[in-house]
Length: 98
Image 1 (cartoon, rainbow, N blue to C red):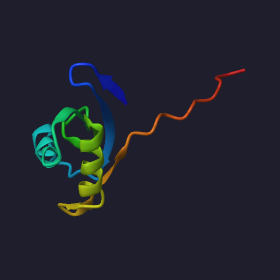
Image 2: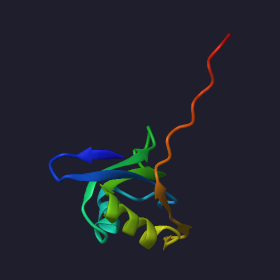
Image 3: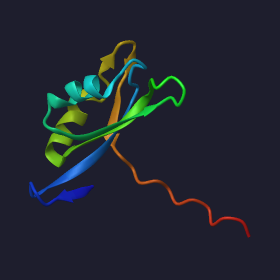
Image 4: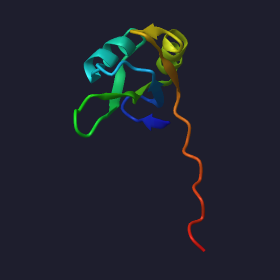
């Protein structure tokens, strides 16, 4: 979560999984735009083919992000069920070698 000084609101990052492999930033943006303005989007792409790996991250304002989660989590797109949730912080990694 980060604060957007220009708009005076919090921007929340969401994890989106279960995306069809043919998904593009444009198609995912259209899906989320129904719930508000998409601030940023980043899809994980295969290094060689450039195609979507089936997941990515979307940023929206807090109340819009909650609406998108409520509206899209569990929705069937193609033959897959979407998983949409707030991004969870990475767990602390080990302390390294000793």
